[in-house]
Length: 260
Ligand SMILES: O=C(O)c1ccccc1NCC(=O)[C@H](O)[C@H](O)COP(=O)(O)O
Image (cartoon, rainbow, N blue to C red; front, side, top):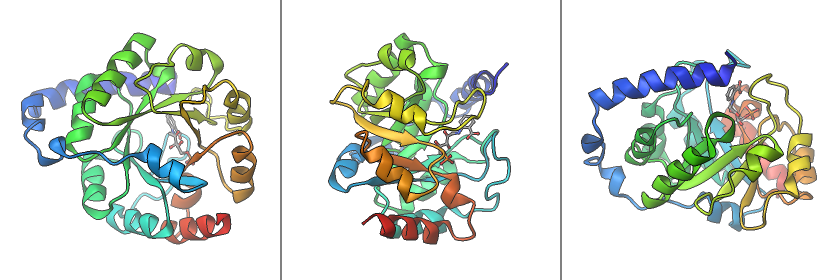
C-alpha cells in the first residue's frame, strides 16, 4: 500500500466511528454549519500573489516539523503577516492535527480556512462546514471522478469552496467539474514524496481559465513564486517552509513582505 492508500483506509475507519459518535444531525445543529463561508478564491484574486499559509505539525515525509506548534498563536500571526487564507491540517494519525485545531483557528482569524484532510466520505464535508471551514480539499489521486463530482456538488450546496488537487494531466482532465473553484497542482508526488515545481509549470497551461490556479508544496523562496506567477498561478500553498522555523508567523511576514 502506498501512503495515500494507507491514509484512505484509516480515514474510512475513522469516519465510521465519527458517524456513530457525532451523527450528521448533531453536526447540523452547530452554529458554524449555518454560517456564510468566506471566499478563498476572491481573496486570492484581490491580492497578488496570494499566499495560503499552512498550519501543520508533522507529515509522513517530514515527521517532526513543529510538534508543539500552537494553533492560535500561529494562525493569528499568519493573518497579521498578510496571508490570503490558511490551510489547517485536521488529520490526527498522519499529521498530528485535529478538528479542534480547525475550530480554534476559526475562533482566532477572519481569513478563509481550508480544511486540509483526506475526504473519502460526504460526512467529512458536513463536518468541515460545521467546524468552521470555508474550503475543502479533494485529492484526485485518491478519489474516482464520480466521487469528485458528488463531493464537490455537496460542498457547493453547503456554500463551501472546493480546491481540487491534481498531480498529472490525467487527474486534471478527468475532474474538470463546474463545482470545483480552484485547482491546486501538488508539486509533491504523494506516492514517492518527490518534490519538483516543474509539475506546476507543466500542468499550468492545461488548466482551463475559469479555475483559479494554486501551486502547492515545496515552495521555499520568493523567486519560486515569481517564476510560477509567469505560468498564471495566483495562489501558493506553503507549509513546511514556515512551520519548520522557530517563529512561523514571522517567517511568513518576511516572505510576504519580500513579495510586495
Ligand atoms: O507532505 C507529506 O508528506 C504528505 C504525504 C501524504 C499526503 C499529503 C502530504 N502532504 C500534504 C501537502 O501536500 C502539504 O502539506 C502542502 O501542500 C504544503 O506543502 P509544503 O509547503 O511542502 O509543506
